[in-house]
Length: 441
Image (tube, rainbow, N blue to C red):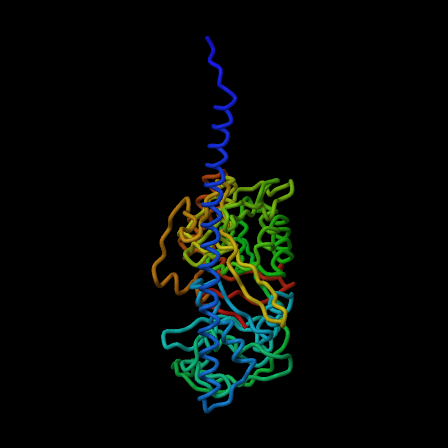
């Protein structure tokens, strides 16, 4: 027998439910209000402290205050206070340089350097047709000073930045150069004045290795990379290669958009780049079109493979398009936006974490390889200085072996040495990239 609820009881129950709902809503609202009040109070404390500092400085400081420098310093300090290596403040001048650095041409002397054991700048590459090349700089030169300022007295990054400047301006480089005369090696100091000029970036190098394998090294993803990459692919395909080795070691990342356009050549119609924002919402940023390269592929990575290059490697592995060889990647997977401000300056801010196809991020974790191949410290040093030949490079040779396991009919030619890369297909651009210890300017 069914039981009936009286109208009074139903009304009472409705009243109780409404009371509970109001109570919960009130509790939530009060919690949000308290959070906002705490946030307002914290910000007010920050403004009060800054105002107090400003008052004390203007009252007692005996030096001259540069208002522009002061404002830039305050903004830079705020971003530094976030404790995020990717968070930066760019002054109007630095933001202008940032925009020009992403263009097809750069302005500088046209060399790539690494920091040597003494803290100086060792030249590991002189870019073709650059002002440095015309001034006679050579690979192996060590830069001791710039315009009379010793490199070891500057931070390495500051020294590298001094190679940049306006077209037509000059920089005086104090060099240490090894020479060989009558079979004896000696060093001599010399000064060379270089006029800064525009030069094109080279971020892609290619060659044939092991007889019939296409080798493509991508040092950074910049505006010129896609055209250089397509030229290299077409050149190697015409030579009937049986597979590709894509070298992303010491790739410092660069433009995720450019990386996606390169990756599109290898993958079918899939999602290429996704990220999770602060609320956990995942957004697909770039997808690939149909059509793909149907040859066995190995991708070589190491602990200095950063950012966009890690997304490339993760996608090749996750979509089972290629084997990863070498070492776990750096684990730098935050999406960073550069946001312009009203006065011409800008801030760089981490706004999300890039995710793999399973929704997990690789930031702080890195991307694991399919075949781990270690290198000796000596081999790593030679690789950084671009002096390690292909046949002496264990990670490259392991990548070729991986192609064979994927079905590639590789010609194993003893003694083949393809250490000198063919850049002829990539002469639409210049400048090799900067890693944490290597810069090109």
